[in-house]
Image (cartoon, rainbow over all chains, first blue to last red):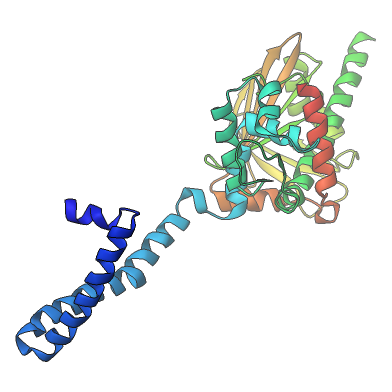
Length: 182
Length: 159
């Protein structure tokens, strides 16, 4: 549609045309208001306005809520655990625990391509486990202390319990071995 | 994936939310038969089960599918760990029901020693949350420092 494309042309001519068109629109609106035969058209305008309002108040919030409750937007702890389920992402976190790092710094030890690292970082960022700058390539990433603390507080006692238990088992296995050798 | 599992003396803990499973992996410098015995004979279980390091006050084991078990620690006599064995397959596999979850002990040979995987499969994500909170001393909750220390240990092993 060539007439439409004119409006998007970033030049003075197009701006002048639309300014003139606005003036003409205002004149037409007054004429329509005074002319009863045009009320149907105005009514159509109201209908489309109603659709717009419905879109803004019903459809948009519905889509927003659906999006927020989808698998990517479940509770933060859930998102965090999903992010932690991947061994490479856990290794990236372990690396970031030593200090912040850029994408290229992360690429070296992990022998992974830049898009793969970026994909993992996106998941970790999404889960709120790491933070970083807006410039995806250069700004260094670091652990997000609060999110990691939530996880740590929650999971550490359980992990500690099993760590101690299995340390005991390790010691006991050594004792069993000694007893068998005697 | 060079970072999936590495030879480490420490326990690796993974939580798989999709299958409501907690998975602990650890390598031991002992044959599978001995680890299986350590899990299934009361005189052995009594020595290591209590994380506090005390011998168990009660340790009953009826080792057969359908047979029951009961471990009671000295520190928490009111909250025994009790359940029923489902599968007894020495030296590689022991499956039991306990605290409403399915426990699996899987033993595989690994470099002269044994890789032990303990799976705790819960009924639902909510059950998994409860399970992690249950029977654990909340007072010992660790902070970020511990996680960072843990992550450092892991990364040292990795690199």
